[in-house]
Length: 358
Image (cartoon, rainbow, N blue to C red; front, side, top):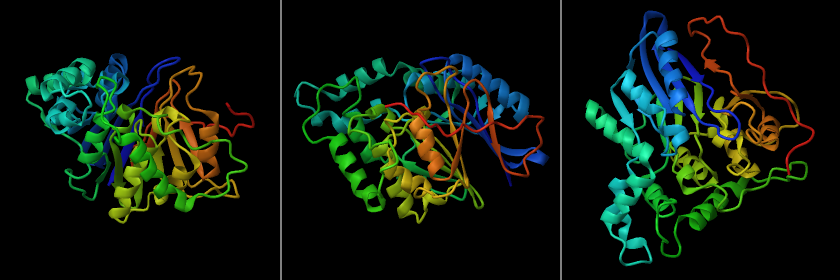
């Protein structure tokens, strides 16, 4: 079975985003499953629609996945739902969890109804996506690692329902939660997982992120493993260390060694706030002493971005045997050897930097 993964460019300058199309199946015979993962802005959502029509030759998308509620991921998906025939929408519905978390806030006046209202107002892009799907009769599923069944194509690794509901307490729209909520406990758990393989980092300037470097919204991102026989690709969206540790723990429970995965998405556009040396050891394997590259890493980064991807993050991936490619205004096509031919040139990997940001 062949597969194609397309990373489309999103944004210019400060704001990066994700817009990804994927298809797999007997592509030469037109037998395919089509997936989109995030849609970026409205403009990139329109480009995603045209890409599917042009290269996948279809008006049907089997599943649209909204990894989390931020506008640079969710807003473009309305264009996909409006323009194409979508069978399933996978997205989290935070307002549906209000009754499970309303007693975990300091203020006793906080109710499930008030929490629901806060979520719908603050996460308007996600709420618009839900309303549009309901109007068009598209089935909505919440993507949780403990409710979506693993099969020979997919393993949904994060978040679990419990992890997600703890994250909701820290969303920007929420009132102050009670003490002892997710960030410290999840980060402590992450350190427990990753320090087992930590090594000497004397020649690496990338450090372990602080506990609150990555927002709860980003840590709620869907982390998804796509499998095609021996080939695997890990989609990480904007996940930070706590979410990546959650995914690693889930993968270990499924007897999946993520360091054997041949391709992956660099989390959060290559931000230094989302990964540290220890978690990269588990995702990529330990640092190499040679310059042999056995993996492909793709980062969605805006054109002319002053910070995405961070050079020290690119260097860290390269030290662990991954060639890094960035969209930066261009499409990137990652595919199996038996995918239909395209008249596209080869992408150029990013170079190792002798000088990096502080």
